[in-house]
Image 1 (spheres, rainbow, N blue to C red):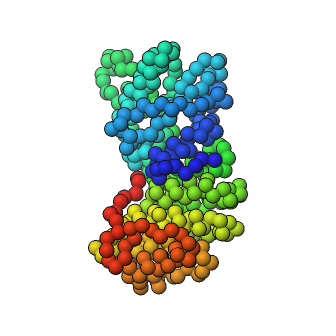
Image 2: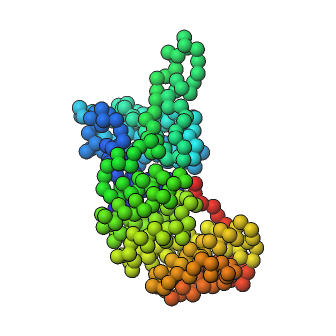
Length: 342
């Protein structure tokens, strides 16, 4: 089972999930065209540590390189490029061509034969992919010049165009890929119940590390899943595992709470509302961990920000959670705001 990634970003989740051979194999088997799958011997799939993404593009792309054998025994490379911007990039097809050349240049330096590289762009933007998929779409020329444009095209894995039922693999992988699919979309909240139900039916809530990988990504990958929403959905799904899961989840929320910055003496307007909402959600979650009835939102709204911070700290103390470093008290700044990964 994958461990929690060091990064909470889309990049970290992508590499943690698809870096696992069995999950990469499940994804390729369920999403590649069947005639292409028949050409590959995916039982020989193994990852390579090489990366070919340019340094200046690392904020927009992640990449994973796998080696595999073809059905006839010859070698091939499967190159997974993850596009994690919210808008499809029209130059992606050209960038991937450059990466493919780099892969084979490296093979020549290693005294290996050139090999077929299958480029796959995994895209999970909020809107369907609408950028060029081939160089001939990218470079527009009169018909007599078309033969001089290399005939190169991409396999775009646009997750928005793949039905949930088409994903193959164990329950953890299916839940992960569904979260990955919907994380950039406005309907992510509507999908949580079904995703959590998959985990419940498979008995995965007891596997805390695996579950925390998914919850950590939900917390960091979108601002649409508030503490209150996640608490409500989890309460429906994990009633039998509350004692083991909820304290761990509480600690996750408390750590994540630093993202708003606790500058209570200077926070105002929209920022104050965001901070108040985050504090209220964490307080209710900590109360559930202590088997207390969560304080209604209307009562929490009557408390000022410093009172909410003090209440959260008292609850943390009762749960024997570590004191949060740099916490705001007495209106003093406790840190600088940071933003969520998009």
